[in-house]
Image (cartoon, rainbow, N blue to C red; front, side, top):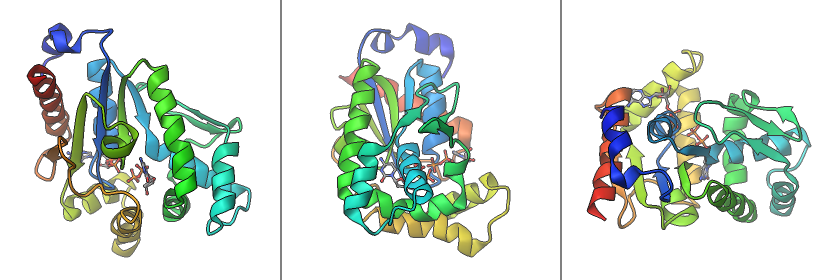
Length: 237
Ligand SMILES: Nc1ncnc2c1ncn2[C@@H]1O[C@H](COP(=O)(O)OP(=O)(O)O)[C@@H](O)[C@H]1O
Ligand SMILES: Nc1ccn([C@H]2C[C@H](O)[C@@H](COP(=O)(O)OP(=O)(O)O)O2)c(=O)n1
C-alpha cells in the first residue's frame, strides 16, 4: 500500500484516535510488523513485552525471588522505567540504566514468564500501558499478548498476528544469528508461549479481532496485509 494512499485516507487523518492493538505468540512478527505499521501510519508504538522484560531484568538484578508473588508485585510498582514510544528509535532504561539489549538476552527470555504470570504485576503494568496510550492521545500501535482483550479492548483496530510453529521457530533462529540449538529455541518460543497462555489467551482471536496468518508471507507482505486490515476496518466503521 503506497504512502500517498495512506496519507490521503480520511479515516487515518491526524487528530482522530487510532489505537491499533496487535497480539500474537512469540516469533509471529509482532514487534517488527507493529513498528513498521506505526511508522507507515505515523503513530506512536508500544512494545508491552519490553515492559515485562524490563521488570524481569529489575527483579533478577536485585535478587528478587520470582516465585514470591508479593515481592514481584512490589517490584512492578517500584520499577522506574523509561521506554521509547517512537517506532524510529528503540531504548529501554531501568533506573537510568540502558537495558535495551540486556532484556533480549536468553536469560531474561527464560525468566520472563514467571513475572508475566504474576497477576499483581500484570495489573500494575497494564495500568502503565493504559496511561501511555492516553498520554499519546490514543494514537498508537500497541503490541503484546492481551492488548486486544484486556489492555485496549476498545481499540479501533484489533488484530491477532499468527504464524505456524515451524515459521516462528525458524524466524527466531535466524533473528538470534543461529546461536541457539533446536532445544533452546523451543524453550524460548514454544515452551514460553505455553507458560504465558496460562494467564492470557493469545492463540485464538476474540470476537471482533481479525486474524492475520503470516506463515506464508514475507515481512513486507505481512506489513501490507496489516495495513489493508487497518484501512478495511476503519472504512467499515
Ligand atoms: N512475515 C515474516 N516473514 C519472515 N520473517 C519475519 C516476518 N515477520 C517478522 N519476521 C522476522 O522474524 C523475527 C521475529 O519477529 P518479531 O517481530 O521479533 O516477533 P515477535 O515480536 O512476535 O516475537 C524478526 O527477525 C523479524 O524480522
Ligand atoms: N502484553 C503482554 C506482553 C508480553 N507478555 C509476556 C509474555 C512474553 O513471554 C514476555 C515477553 O514478551 P515479548 O513480546 O518481548 O516476547 P517475544 O520474545 O517477542 O515473543 O512478556 C505478556 O504477558 N503480556
